[in-house]
Image (tube, rainbow, N blue to C red):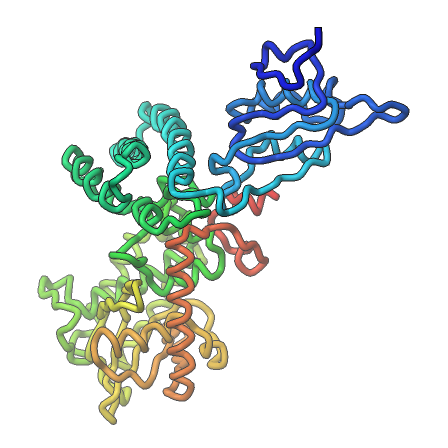
Length: 495
């Protein structure tokens, strides 16, 4: 009998047979693996797995056994056919196939862009979302037995991921005459009618709809988190409308290392403050309480002008003593010396309130303003009105003083100047750091203000766009890593 030129068979039926060319359907990508030849022979070297990853590599694939059988049956070449999302921008090649390519010298062949139409993109997204939902079920189920504060949010996130799967299925099966946009509105309305307020919030925060409505032929639909980050991370981003909520410290943290921003601002992993940080926080709180009158029960609002030096020094010293105890400081020689230095520094601070040319008019004044789609917020420790009618913005510091030249690229002071203009409609010609322990003020003048304003505006746009896109990879450097609170869990540090 003559064997047919083409066999259609499952993995079991292929056992015991050899073929020149083997095609595997539904592998999630297009890959071509050429069979290496043995020295002195022209038989394919894939039959015994020579040069291939061990069996554990195939366990990483949904259809790993099928692919492994195909690779060991081919004399010349194995081709994996499929377009289900693995070649899309921001997605990783399945690790088993990638290793097989490396071992055999094979290469990926990306399908032509025109082959990915709207229907293909929907089905690709549906497959990816189905795998994501299954992964979420395992993860959330494992967490239910733990004592966690965010269990409710985990469950709601899992529900929303399932609803997005239902949404994609409904859109893929919609009537031919109905457009994607028309179907999307109807499906969303029905799904939102059956959710809790928290699920509604998470559902609305997803960027899946944006991907669906902007899909073009050749462009895959990427559900939230398809760039490699956990899809649930999108729900934790500090969004405000279409943008991101930022502060000066957020911008500085992200520019130093996006992964550190993720740990600190998105996941909010707590870190223990150093003694120096605890001391700085304590001094800030003492001055805040002193100027707000909190101990006397006559607290004022941050926008209410305050007369300089209106409260006696004894009140300030009493606040220092109580703040020292609340911060957990003791009576070691070093701590006693630090307390004495703080007393001296705050005594000098109190004296200068009445002696300086500027008049302090606001303390701990808050601001919030928009730059493009992003919202920036924060507060300024002190605002002085200068004799010429302009204003100086002052931030308290307890560390080592910076040189004035270092302030030209300073994010915090430049942001404060922009905030005074945008949020308060106040012209602030000076910005300064006041180093309390050294009784030294380092100021920026109005010279170069335009370039600094452009600097901070660009930084806000850059950081906001990076956070929104979940570009949160580590950027290790000695300066950033030497004082990072998250070295123990950082993959870059481990490497």
